[in-house]
Amino acid sequence: MPLDHRALPENGGAGDSSVLTAYGVYQGMRASAQHLWGDPSLRAKRVGIAGVGKVGHHLVEHLVKEGAEVFVTDVREEAVRRITERHRDVMAVKDTDELIRVDGLGIYAPCALGGALNDDTVPVLTAEVVCGAANNQLAHPGVEKDLADRGILYAPDYVVNAGGVIQVADELHGFDFERCKAQAAKIFDTTLAIFARAKEDGIPPAAAADRIAEQRMHDAAMARRSR
Image (cartoon, rainbow, N blue to C red; front, side, top):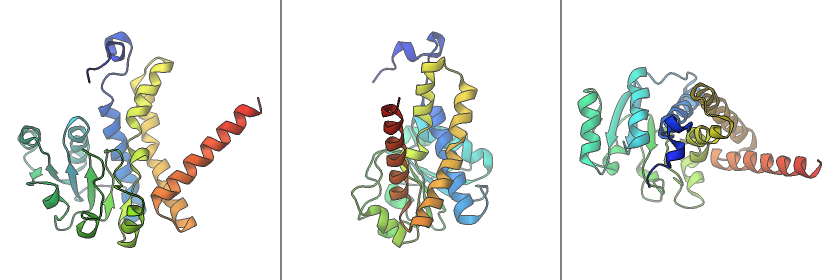
């Protein structure tokens, strides 16, 4: 779909929302590292990215800059080639099936189609964390429990990929990139809060995120009624 001309920066719009989408996912990864390993640094962590399109290639930039060990795959060979030519240390693998089996994988980032976490992929996933930009990563209800049962930490997709929504929503106030980036940086704290709620309630992070979202919607509805 072509970009609405009103969203172009020269017309006061936010422009390409993939920039802050990737930044938010990166913050979600840092929060996952903090929760699981006690340190937000991703240096020397093995991160596998499935899909290096508009969001994925920005995510690679953040990870390479921090010193992560990055593996990538994409159905489009030219997308992979663009990444590996720019970053010689980034390793390409044949497909997602190979990516999720990479030995010592710390974080798996689905950044393409939905349904990446399913009955076939979860049992063989080597990563300790799943944190990616793709929407609807859980193929069906119950997958979140399968991940938890395997000890895999799942950062809910609609939480960590919210940077793009934050970027677009800021157009309502007269777009300011630095203000948006500061808001997207808060995805780090939001993700940590979800992990804490999940631990407190004894439920998977996806369920904890839903509870928090439902409570916020309820509180907002009550506030409107009381005006």
